[in-house]
Length: 144
Image 1 (cartoon, helix red, strand yellow):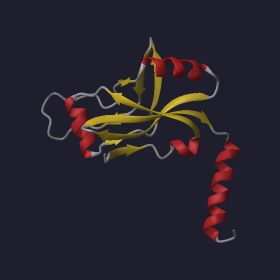
Image 2 (image 1 turned 30 degrees about the vertical axis):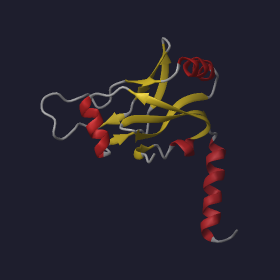
Image 3 (image 1 turned 180 degrees about the vertical axis):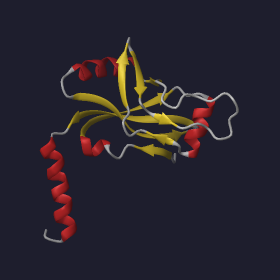
């Protein structure tokens, strides 16, 4: 089934080592879904937290829907992620470890529903980022 990708977090692969990925549903209002269809989503600085056995997405920006009337949504509100209980238990243990975080990688439509691909990630050190950029510069200069 073809998927329509709404938004990707391109900076995530530069800043983190992605170890596992999960597909999660997300609870949205009607105007948020319509803004997603227009592609007005930004996942750049967003992250997920687990609180009281539920997962929530923080700092994701979904712009206002242009044709809505007075009932607009808050662009930066905290949104609930829909995951299985076993996945949440596993992620709770992993995110308590030092260095792990739970970040969104991309948002897309599957069978008419908005889904978020989440990644369990460990932050890269500064030298890991430099090594990667150095490799790209060497490759583009033709010295390889």
